[in-house]
Length: 305
Image 1: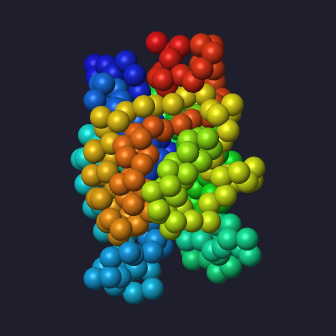
Image 2: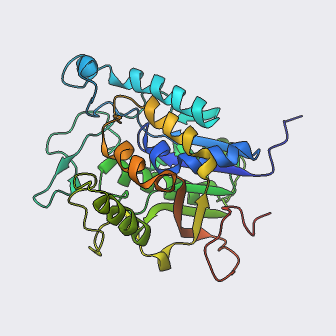
């Protein structure tokens, strides 16, 4: 007899280790603490990431090219901090390689001109989605979280993670599609990560009032094309969990090659406080909408129980 599934089940599809902690760390920790099953699917191990620790630069893609295994260790520590025990790589460890990124003349993230073999950006979409389908059908999440159509800020791996998550979600729910990959499961609700434009504006104003002119310098939150923020009208859910901020910050510190104590993430929190990291926001993408309460939902499973 199979083990009964927990009543509440959440799945997240992310591009690289550290993306999950920055965007959803409080959400993950909060639902784990509440007894929900939380599954993280990482599409790559971030092999092309910039190493911000001088003594570990030798790990990067231009030197030893061993950053992937190191970041897997960082991911383990981060998940320990958040309490997440079910975290897997799409297709298995090292199946898809980080694609890296470049910038266009407007400093927007784009794909590189020269691409390595085996990277996630050039992976066959159906093949990559077929690696997600059995995970969805096995874990049977009621809520699936991923990026918007441009991956939040344009990184090619984030864009591809969005595509794989959305296509995998559709395929997993078709009873006649690839029965060898498990019994069909249509995820009841799909949400996209975002940030509140209004809350971001308030935070930056607080930083400037405190004399911090560097943190998030260059961010124009009034720019309607800023892809990683949404107006409050487009947000459907806010997960508040200030009591889980310390776990989130511990998980961020675990991703030490990518996030430094003197960087903007921690610098901003010292001025703004726990509210900078204690609230996470979501847009509705597909499935069953939230019950109409006249405001944001405070539970990603609202109306699904």
